[in-house]
Amino acid sequence: MGPSNEAPRAEPRRLGSYTTAKITAGRVERLEQHVARLRRDAERLGLPLPPAREAERCLLEAARAAFADGDGILRLEWSALPDGTPELRTRPRPFAPLPDRWRAAIASAIHPGPDGRANTKHVDVPAYDRAREEVASRGVEEVLLFDAEGFLVEGSRSNLLVLTADGDLVTPALALGGVEGLGLAVLRHGRREVREARLTRDDVENAREVMSVNAVRGVVPIVEIEGRPVGDGTPGPVSRRLGAAFGRR
Image (tube, rainbow, N blue to C red; front, side, top):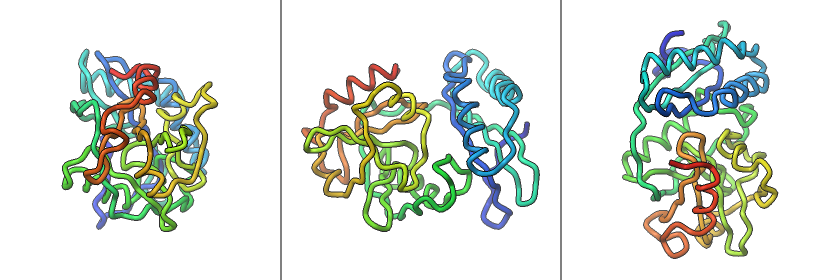
């Protein structure tokens, strides 16, 4: 149960996926769902499944060692070197406070599309790495990734929800290759109002609301994209309603 090593490009890259859990007062939020998600993704990638109890124990022990009764974020990875055997690896990091409303930019990187990842949170996607670098360099909280055909796929660290100009609540079609995130799955459970769609940049620029969704941050309104306000530039009623329903803190 060593630390997760996102290897430099000069070293062999690992095959596998990971999940990222919020630790609150020493407790792993949505523990069983994170383990189920990791096992689902392993199956999709053709890897042996991590034992559920071992994965739960790994998360719990790593959370206790890193945070005791405090808060944080813990990445649990199930991956292997080429021709190797998958293993569980953890990496903790502090829970850094972020604004309750986000600004976003359009990523310069092009989303690679499905590319065999089967909508998993794959450990090695260079476009994601470049997009996350842009988050820091451009002074925003998220960047939006479009594919080569100009369709919105996802954010660098979140799924996206868009309330269109016509009032439809949609998320980018999973067929485009985005991660099938746990946060989005939790949010969509029992909500038929959320459907999948192919969204262009014009759709996003004319949207009433745009929201980031992930298991760590919940639902966060994106109020500005490329310096331009989304809607009236304030969190809209849908983002407030869904944020409350998700249990955002």
